[in-house]
Structures are given as C-alpha cells and as structure tokens.
Length: 241
Picture (cartoon, rainbow, N blue to C red):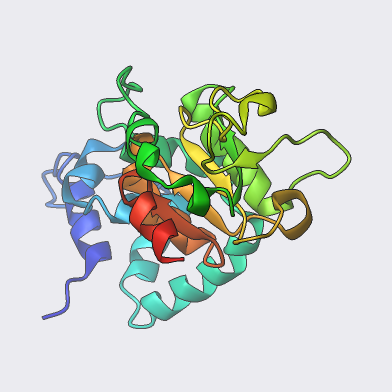
C-alpha cells in the first residue's frame, strides 16, 4: 500500500483541533501548510523537510492533495530541474541550516576535517588544482556565498585570489595563505578541474567541510554539474583524478 503523505499530514493537523458536538472538526478553513507546526513535523520524514519547504505558507488542503497525486514524484522532479537554474532561494536557507545544525546553533568545534585530512594530499597532485577556500565570513554566510558563486559564477571584475589545493610550503610561501595552499578552515573549498583556472574555467569541484556534511545530497541535487566531495574523502578523490 502506497503511503499517502498528504492524508497523513491532514489527519495529524486535525488532531490539534477539538471536535465539535456535531462530530465535525473545528479546524478552520484556509489553514496554511506550516513547517513549524509540531503536528506536521511529527509525521513528516526528515528527508522531506527541504523537499516540501517550497510549499510552506500555501493552503494546507491544496498541498495535501498535491502530495497525494500519483504523478507527484515526476511533478517534483520537473520543478527541481527548473528551480536548479537559480540556486537556493532565500527562504530555503533556514531549512538547510536546520538540517546541518539540528541543535539550532552552529557548533564551535567544526570545519576541522579539511584542515586535518588535506595534509595527506601530495603536493604533486594538489598543485594541479586551482582552489579558493571560503573562510572569511561566518559559517552560515559561507553557504550563501557558495550558493551565489555557483549560481552567478565568479565575478571577473573583482579580485578573486586563488592558490593550489596543496603545494610545497617553501614554494608557496609567497601566496599569503599560510602554507601556500588555499584556505582550509572554512566550510567549502572551490576547486577547478585539473590544470584549469577557477576564474577562467569555473568551479568543477567543491570540497565540503564537516559543518555541512548533512546537506551534501541537497547541494548535489541543486547543482548537478558540480562534484561535491566530503573533506574526509578528498585526498582519495583527487588522487584518483
């Protein structure tokens, strides 16, 4: 039996309203689909939060009917293909932050994996990749900055400093990045294709640091032409390339 998610949500919301003596629910008409509603969150699978965020604030009855359509997966795929052209919308970031940081706060001890694991990337390999670490703004703003760069591209009219993904510290001491390689203490490292330039040829890979491991699947769906790599798997990944 196929689960009718819309029906499950509607029943959950009805429970939050009393039943009148006539046996009719006191649930008001025109109720909105609200992802902050605890009754909805209780029955909604976590993996659906980002997927259904686009319906937040819409009429509950309409949303539930759409969810129960037999062609809903196909409908959603078409919507995501169209929306992926513009990156994440402003109203989607809070859902992504909640998924990345379930406690509601950005932990202090994060973004350590790239700092640790990329030390094992051999200079003769890392020097072939042009890179730029997003590290000079807050952790939450780094996600927005990534979204902007992947959506609009690198602005060639403004300074955009890059460095090798890894290199011999003695050879890279003049690059001003503390070790000669791109910054590793932020949430994301933008990487070119092998032998290419970020500014000229664009972003081919993005190393995702541990702060945002939980949203890698969301990033891949929204930007399918970019390769997103966990920081703790980056050495093996770039060594294979």
